[in-house]
Length: 445
Image (cartoon, rainbow, N blue to C red; front, top):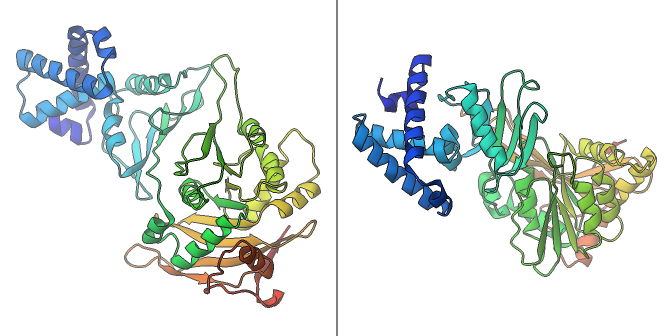
């Protein structure tokens, strides 16, 4: 079997061993002939070009005899091993891949366009996978070993990386790399079918009228993408503070302060949590606070900020429905060290949260806004959720796609008045409810 075939096809154990040996051999020869001190002074692109040139000379001098394509493949593999992330390097360069999932050395999956597929490629051994993992975590000054078998970090290039190794992972070392696509505007998301023009007009008015908005959805539904797009609607002159675990938001306004939490160091010290950053942000005179994801006790601080003058704040939360989002916020807020009765937290949420935007990833991989709901309850009332827009999905069609249509319902008069006072038009598709009976209302406790 040719070198090219061995690289591009599923590998038998013998072929994989032979290929790995060839790559290891030429990697060693390459390291013998380069000046490491000189290489460290070069930019990344120059370093790669220099290694490819030196390796080309070695192969011309010592063999083996290869076709042009095989020679290019070998040079690429060796340089990727010496400089990059080995067989993962081409995947990181593929713009269509949004997630790379390595389940041990023999199983590599990727996500493209919302669909997960297994690739016909493998690491040569568990040791090679561990070397790749160690190279990744070392770039962020972290280490992974038996005493520290889990790492969650952001690479300098922006990807979010999660590593978990044996004995915690019974399937071998597991590596997940989440790549973040470029930021999309709401107009572009209309082109994808995630929402429509009427919903865009409504969301634009809600953001500019400083409604507090929670973006809710399960993992992989596009919460951060939508949060970024909604943030683009904030007027230019406002001071915006973003708070994230891994910096993903890419706001275009000029007055943006980006804060990122910090994990503990190898000695277990120096941790800065999302809650620490939310508390500190309140002392920074923010016009808007944008929290990438609420997942702990910081929910309490965020709710208090929303209900005490920091209107127009935005945040995301993991939940499967608008009702679930409210219950999850209540549970997360109770996780702070401040002991507050559930009843008081209920009142706080009724005071703080104005709008919930629910996202869903359908079976065909499409991500859509499936509901825009406003919270129309007060004080100790049961949560009263009013649906103002939703996506009515149909069963999967013969083309493998899920079709449907967006539906609109009247806005509560209180919401309409707030939009009017902020100078924001009320989209005609929605209108204003003349009475409570016209509202698409449901209660949750």
